Length: 186
Image (tube, rainbow, N blue to C red; front, side):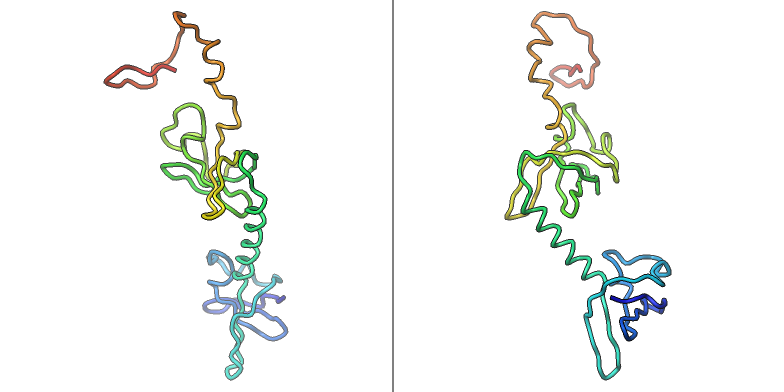
């Protein structure tokens, strides 16, 4: 445990009983742009290098954070089961889906599992930083890949379609897509 004393070129000086150097790349998972915010604060560090001749000690806060993340990830992966519902935060959105942070481990929410209606891009329904409830669809323990779904938490609109829409009934709807072979009506 040490207290950050000052900012220097390339990092911070940390007092752990003696002065040690904390490179800016070892402050956090992503190197912070402003190191001044750490001055005066106390953190836990891992000693990564000692040079007795030069009386130089190098410490890392990043390695401890990564170790703790790995422990948390192992704990979550040991408890995860298909079918369970979890709350997570949308971390990243791609063309094919969204990555959801489940508290230390990420799962993929595929675009086809976001909603029962057709979604062209996940950004139509989700935003980065949004908190969502998801269901674990599949979990591969070997690859540690987690497939998630949101629509699975809603009732399937096709389950009672036969009762709602009788053959020969006249209904109003909105044309959502026109193709060579016909039109899709919602």
